[in-house]
Length: 254
Image (cartoon, rainbow, N blue to C red):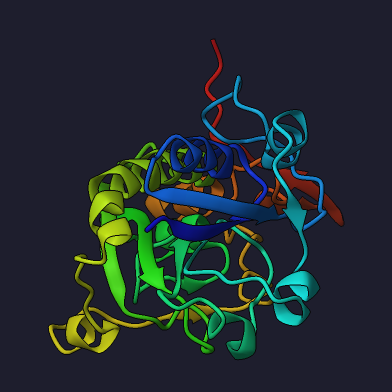
């Protein structure tokens, strides 16, 4: 029997995964849910459409959350792929096999928002993303796979974002067959916490006050702050001269 699947997402990575799902004989894609927010396409795949464009051009049904809650739509499995809305417990419970989230940071150490910024600010040696089951508490579900890579001294927020997208996609291909077949495994985040991995949660206010560079800091600390905010969708790090913000970047002169 085919798995009835819904994809939640907007970015090109969601398009790539949607393409793969509709190519599978054991999957019936019911539709996609979009956030209706316009995104700058910072993904590493410049020639891949955002999901809204792909869905419209391929006549894939575009659903909304209310459709899933109120209509008699039977669904087995959901994928929230860098989706920016919080789903309710009532909606999660509609999916008999659960909803799998593509989180843009390693769990449990980078739950919440701005993982690429915080990974650099905290001088983490490992970056990446996490495939995990959704629960009502944000980013708190069992982990299916951590997609890890080493963070270098040259990495910036945008480079971590792009590498995370690539590694999340690789992780998806490594586990999707077992997920569809119902044979995949997962572990509680507490199991990793008990082994010494620190749990962190970063909310929408977690970067307030962190962009201003302290010139009495070490060179390494100054560069770390600059790299953490070197991203086209974030205000950059800055110093203040005569009351004027002067923004800083790690872009090298040629």
